[in-house]
Image 1 (cartoon, rainbow, N blue to C red):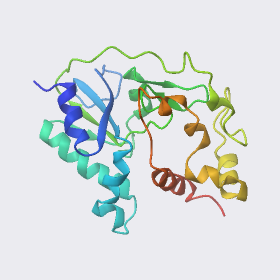
Image 2: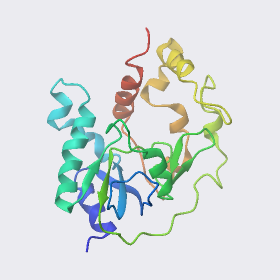
Image 3: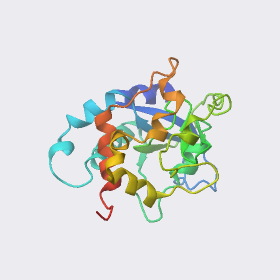
Length: 224
């Protein structure tokens, strides 16, 4: 029988990591016959070095990270006898945010973004693996925001991410595109403010070049 640790070992060989898992019910939108869904995200800070050495990064085609994810996770899922699922599958699209929260490893932060028990506000998912087996899963870790002074709530220089309001994407993009947004282009200041990512117990960090890559993608459709 497959174990959670065995799957994590397999995906870590590809610079990925299991960032949570759960047993889906009939209303969770999982493929029929799924016993366990495993949420897979980057294994930081190794991920960027591995991805940039892959052919998808330099072949000049669109969506290099998505294509890399589908190739790599598709192969892992096949080896496990499971099915790889991706946020871009659809429509209808898999409910990745709901799945992440169902694992108990993620919850909404005070600014609305998901926060993870070890990845903090830098949590992201390259995909998920659906297995027919019902794996043994650990109990959820303590909620990371409960003892936190919430520096994320004041980190955005223009207030695009604040408690009690929707993310103001146009305001964020306008600031990032301005001369005052240089620091944000190396990674969202709100995400970088999360204490979980700098905690000695988690040792989670992200290569600044990777943050810049994601920010460039976020800004691609900004009306300059």
